Length: 565
Image 1 (tube, helix red, strand yellow):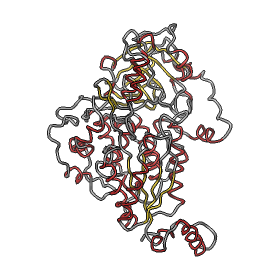
Image 2 (cartoon, one colour; image 1 turned 120 degrees about the horizontal axis):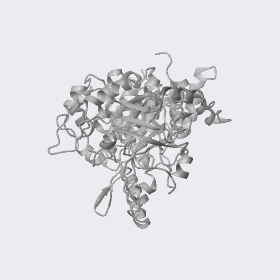
Image 3 (cartoon, helix red, strand yellow; image 1 turned 120 degrees about the vertical axis):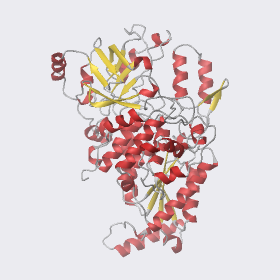
Image 4 (spheres, one colour; image 1 turned 135 degrees about the vertical axis):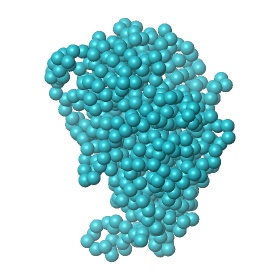
């Protein structure tokens, strides 16, 4: 039975008084005894003036509240941290764990029998899933949805692959300041998340694959009525779960569900960031993400979805083509279709309900994929003993096997200061190396791994180079970029010993990343590494430095991982 307002009473030593006082205060908001006797659905409000990805959250809250009340339950809206990728310094990833902790504690501290978690921008849904995985009530997720596309000179535009493409053209001198300013006005034409298969879209789709939101909830556009109807139905579902009970996120995130997520991630052209987030979610469950399995899946499941940055199109077209259910139908043979969902149907039943969209070409078949390789590959070698990630579907074929001279940047500041110098000793065959940009080194593992092509090479027409770092890159980015090297250089990883002029071997088909120096010299340099830098003197920065884990463990806090499972 639901506990409603009686759930998790404040401690005064007298529970009767605790309930009496709680009811007295909440009645100041105008609630009747009838309302206060209902099951309670919490609704997390992640609206912020700093977060255009969540610009439709007020409308979604109202629709969700309507659905809750139609079910006979009582909606209670509460605020949480809101993180936008472009407005968080030093990086949104630095704050993901804080949001996960705060959201978990708000769910735990306040009386609610189920919760609706509304999120969209890159780190929000991962933080909320991490929080819900550590909570003990049913949670239903409501992604905010992708934005609409804009246009420029007859070309459709969308954030944020096109942001990077046009900025690259501007750096290369192909377009002038007036045109880049015009493009700036048209890239983001509405509220909502990036409309390509970046991190926000990837995590929204994976939320659906994992069974945590309603079918088509991962892709319905932010600006369309379907998104609002989904919000109402989400509220209605949460009300039913509050009254009758239902599975928790921990119960839904079985090994089968997580493998299903890996299959979909490889097929959809998803973000490299999803690997870090899935690892963090797994940590909350007391397990380790199996990156060997992720790589194995990628060798069997090719890229099927024709969306930027691995393809050409946008999330609206993906949704019109059938969205996640249609994609799952194409990879059904790789899925565990018995996996359960929060809405009561199995993944197999969701697939059975798919109505094919005639003539659509956005979601390809396994027999005729967009590209014959999976989205992501997991690399290992003496440079990355615990692994690294490359988005091979968005990389250059000619660079997938490459031996090049390292050009090393010590940190993001060094990169910014020297990259565009005409005096930089660099050629197109070289490999750009950025270190001290991982979880501890940056701090916060920024999206600096997508290093721009040095200006003097960009002006020569160079479009891609091999780039290697312990940082992340945006899911909207493209190129031959090796990321998430673990352990990071600031934590004693081998990236710290690379010197400009060393040769590095990248062999994606062999899943290898190797610093090509004699073993004795490798060992000598590792032994000579200085002691790690001390932690910052106070506050969240100190907490983060002392407790953040490495990329392969999700860059979560070690004390937030489940130690009992």
